[in-house]
Length: 69
Image (cartoon, rainbow, N blue to C red):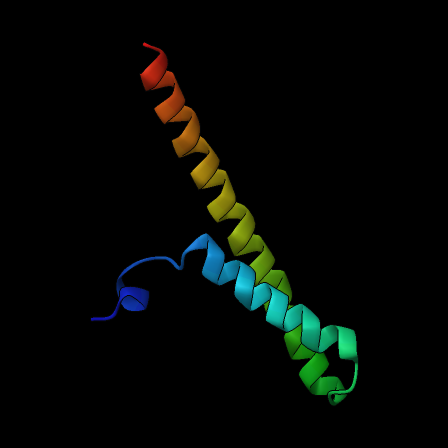
């Protein structure tokens, strides 16, 4: 199995996908259906990236607390 099948995507991967999708939206040259799908994808990627960032922040705080002990 590949890494993508066994683990959540890395924050960097989510961010790269979001940037690519936003670039497509920014051009505004794609057909309307494609733009709507890209918007839906951007919303999903943003939610995933936000959740992943929250997880990473919690882990960093946990590490910082354990180092302070």
